[in-house]
Image 1 (cartoon, rainbow, N blue to C red):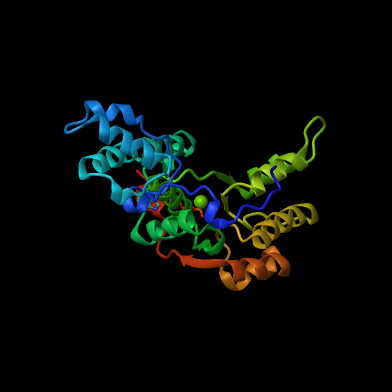
Image 2: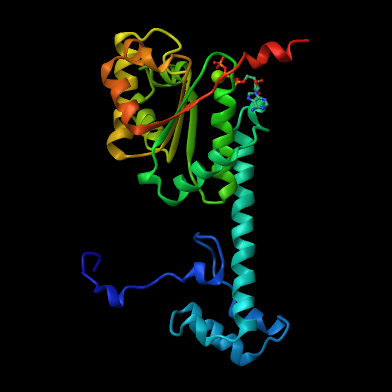
Length: 261
Ligand SMILES: Nc1ncnc2c1ncn2[C@@H]1O[C@H](COP(=O)(O)OP(=O)(O)OP(=O)(O)O)[C@@H](O)[C@H]1O
Ligand SMILES: [Mg+2]
């Protein structure tokens, strides 16, 4: 019965991957019989590995070669998963930002997001035109992919977001809203780039408020100087962004000028 209470002592435990030195994840178990082909493999070892995988015995009941067999299997799975995450990122990232390299702060934020998604403040990346806000945001998404922890993300400029969500015959804009607002990490670029109308303000408010209430991490960028956020985005949105975000301020000249031929 699904609603039956099971005492914690009898609940099925996952394997302690940390004890094996394997990054967290949900991996397919090894086939214990393949231990026979592993250097130092034996029938008894294979049986012990099977018992361990069925949680009938603890890890310390295994011989070192048996632990190594299990460890190598899970490390291979973790590496495959990491590669899949990076490939997924690379197929979705806009070409211009595909090579954006995360700095240590971006990597630390990414680690925090995958380890404690509900307990990691969002990022508000601010700075004048061309200082690298979009570049920075995509570098953070790359850092998340490089952790190898499957994490869904959606990235929109505010203008594209409004285009997606504008009610249109034959499209369920509420379902689109739910799918965008429910993603693990939401990146909205260029907040406040255009003057908000009553409708765009309401959509932005609903989205930010949803993420705020659910304590879900996001990355927001804006050209609007922090002191003017309230005027441009409205009190309700600016207030929530202030509480839920850590600010990353990018300074300097418009990098595009330096790139002009
Ligand atoms: N750290 C960086 N290293 C190398 N190139 C960078 C870096 N940051 C930004 N760039 C490049 O500089 C250009 C401008 O960056 P980006 O588009 O991120 O600026 P922005 O702040 O988002 O600008 P806007 O306010 O107009 O949206 C892009 O070509 C980008 O690839
Ligand atoms: Mg930008």
